[in-house]
Image (cartoon, rainbow, N blue to C red; front, top):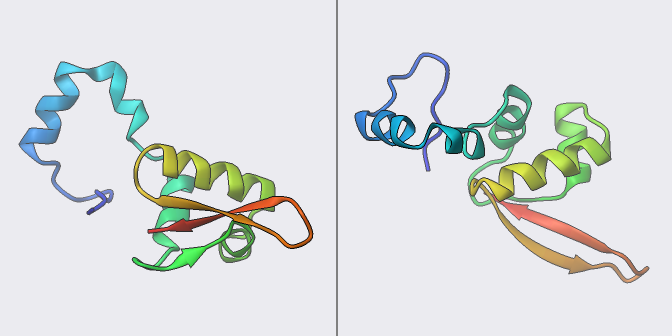
Length: 94
């Protein structure tokens, strides 16, 4: 999936869809920070919130929130990992 960057032309199909359901555009559009997080992940790479927090100089909780939002918008896949110490961790895949 290609992500539009600042100076790229937006496809006519996407523009048409946005005009039909403008209230839905926010559900797929990424903020600058969300885009930074997404671009920090190599396609096919598996990452955790802790790894992204380090790469993007964010707190772990904020990185986790950003990853969840990017996943909810369909840009990432997510799997659940149960730690031996108890608790869960999500692994995100681009």
